[in-house]
Image 1 (cartoon, rainbow, N blue to C red):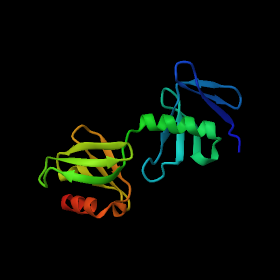
Image 2: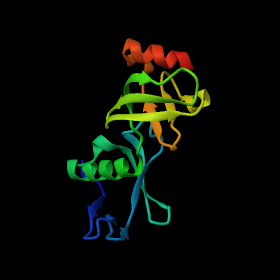
Image 3: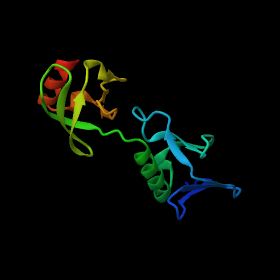
Image 4: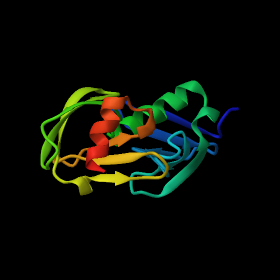
Length: 155
């Protein structure tokens, strides 16, 4: 399926959106409507001043090159590492430091209080560290036993 628009990067690295009738918009940004529950669906292409130019129902309906551009832009816009494993905590009283393995590598985060662990839909959790970085646990039941045990102490 060929989309009725074009998306490319200009020499400044900005995304350029061109409609089927040739109207061009420079420095556009894709934005997910539901970044956690449906990350590959319901994406809007926004103009530099925030007006919606295009609605994409599903990323997999786009040609590979266009999809890659959209995914790269989304990744740079939304920094939300996904926790795969909790390896260690400095203690069970907050604030405490967690050592975690994420989809972006190993790191540590400081949990200021139990309220910084937020329950989302289903088995998902959002953990906000002391620097304001949001870490996602997409499905806490898929974590290993040690990670679940540590997490249960804070829930």
